[in-house]
Image (cartoon, rainbow, N blue to C red; front, side, top):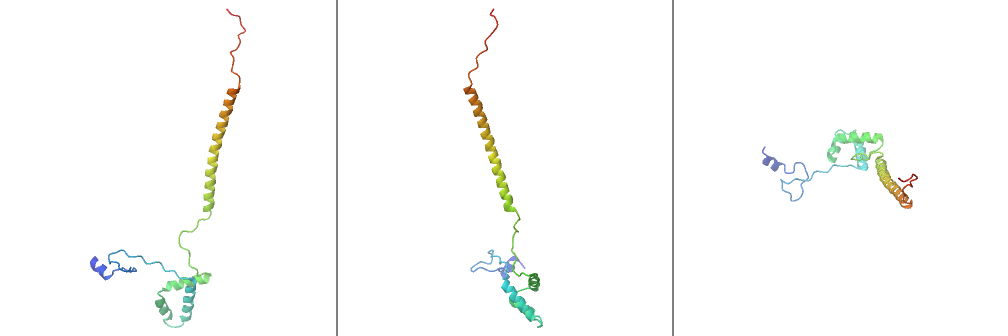
Length: 148
């Protein structure tokens, strides 16, 4: 099929169409399904009850729009003790806040050491200046020898 025929036959390519959208517009992507712990418990209870009925679990899965892999995963999670959904995204790094605090403190130490060195230099200069201003001017040495 040509691209025009294909887009005419499948205007939204499996995506949810927004109202008033042209068939050539980029459409919104479907969101990832998330199932609550209570929902999983209910479905697992129904599946357990329908296990003895031929085709019962298949009809449950079709009615709910689920896959058999959902049941297998949820059963494993139930056996391990928690059906709560997993948190998505990057895992928090242990000690990251501590490392950031250590880096902050190291920068502060460097800054204070620079200021201390500068203050010591100024104090040393002031001492030398004070010594020069408070000491009497040097007199030329008196000659002890005879004049010719």
